[in-house]
Image (cartoon, rainbow, N blue to C red):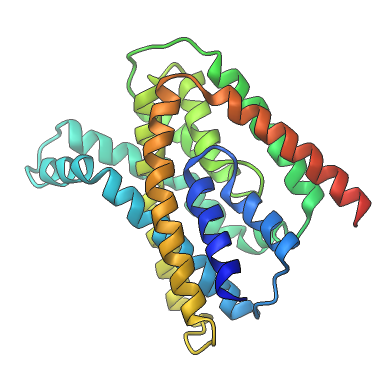
Length: 265
């Protein structure tokens, strides 16, 4: 992989991690178009690097919220921050369960299956369309909502199902305020990303001696900057009920992917 390809994939990861169009699906499509000539260990390391970049961008954007949560937890009281933290933990449980017990089955969907990604993008489009039509409320995420949103996050581990799209849509369809839904969606994934990075680091499968270090560094920077822009932009878009635009985009890309998959199997 050359530096330009790494930058392109980094931008794709940074934008699509937050915009409701499926980062994993677009990375699969990007690899199918650009070609994935990395060996398995370096491909895994590159994925870890990009996810670390987007996690950092989330922390930067929500630094005030995260600090308030930490400060509230240090009071050791059942306050709003403690309740929010419990909701985050509850939302993580389905994805952790799938990651621990169905990792091999999940990996089977990540093999350049463009048609599958296309069908999942269409499902994402449907979710976004209905969420965009939901009424505005002032409701917060409840404990029960957190678990249901967590289930949608676990399903979104499939390439083509947008994590942010699925979790925000589920929250909004459950009657949660759109801004609160976006905030919860972005914060709930940070512990999972760092958990996955830690798991990959301890697995011993990462190769740090590759010849693509410069390319990976460029991909990291591109993903981080794109993530900052996309995360900030997405919060505004959700608040203004502009998800239907992304529904149309996912529908178009999904149909193109399906046609491409049948044309070039």
